[in-house]
Length: 66
Image (cartoon, rainbow, N blue to C red; front, side, top):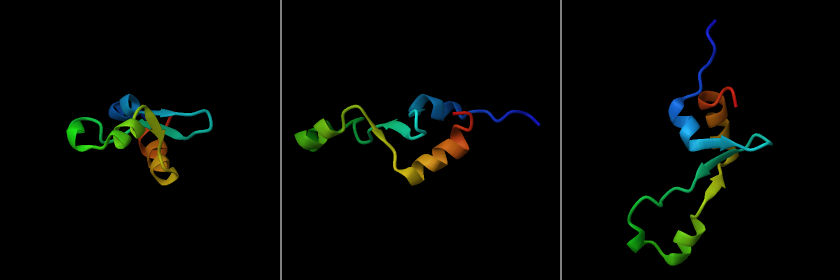
């Protein structure tokens, strides 16, 4: 049986924490900042931990080797 490969798009977008949670970049920061509130722009800096239901999909399907 061949080894399972990590999806190359997923390895560029997601990281795993030590406890197995999935870290991703904040959504909604690519363009259109003029219409967003300053509070929203500030809160979307950096990265965020995905919800458990979404993280389960990423870990199982896209990052099988961690």
